[in-house]
Image (cartoon, rainbow, N blue to C red; front, side):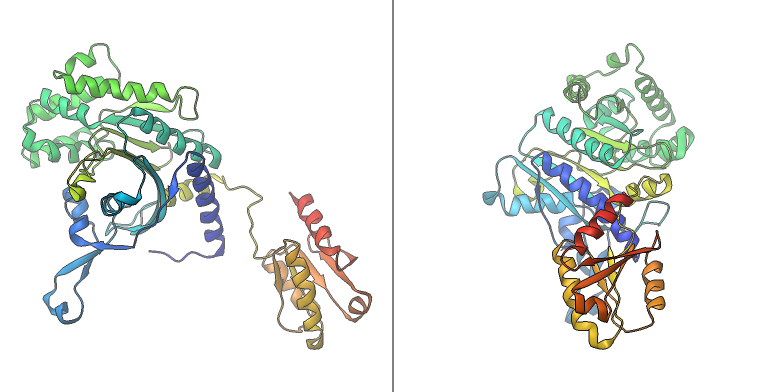
Length: 432
């Protein structure tokens, strides 16, 4: 959990602004939920490892001594969304498309791009089983990444039913499917030998583990005949569903970025259909992930509502953009466009009036509050990278003018107070 200094906040707001604009172009509506949920709402939705990472809140007041928890900080934005849909179903459209950009909390071990408090930028659609939903979501997140300057991302795509069919082919009992997927999901992190060892520890035979890794490798290479390894109709249907999603994105920003990855499992247990993650070469882990979760709302409502969503991880995007130097040079790096200098305490009312004129013109104006030496005030403005200083002395007050000093060019020009705003805007435009 971190503090964010002004430059950090400006970069975060820039990325959030881009993602929000893209989501809204696709017809998604904003939603916010509380930071805290009932513990029972969250438990059992994320798999065995997810349950261990939930930040629990102990009971309060007279129940404090019990040491029991009844609330928790939200682990993600998807389960709260499912609760909201179940709770407010009558107020929501049959096809509900929402985006949500808020922090979540996980009791995880911090690492590069991994924090205990971080923002997720979610986009979800509920009410349709059509692969158009997955295609539009993949295209929306692709548009957001392209607009931020990413070109080398990969959309890893898989299907939970495809995985189930592969596990059946490899002789892994259904009772061990969930635990097998937890191990498979770590393949890119711990390698084949690590997966074999973890499966053995989870009670899966060595023969089944070896066969599973071989099948996954053949699928990953898209070898001829791979599809025939699927022995049931559900697996073949899943394979075709993945193909349909890719075909529907032809001609969009997502086209050419897809890769079928049969080892992709997504650790969260609520996924039921297509699953996806987006990664870039220089980041261990993904920029985001998601998938279809047709049964999650039913856990709260008692009836299934089809749903699919994707979550971009703000922190990881910021890490990669910072390391690659991807932020635009035009992104504000100072708190103001112009600083209003004060020569004499008696002139403060005049300075505030001129500052108001500049603000009404659309400029960001910082008024220096003390009548220090002008050199000290200019030095302060320069330290904050404020490009212009407005100087208002007795002569300017009498003439209804103001002198604008360009700190980079070390030049200054006197303007009528009503025209000073346009002059500063022109100077900012020339700076790019």
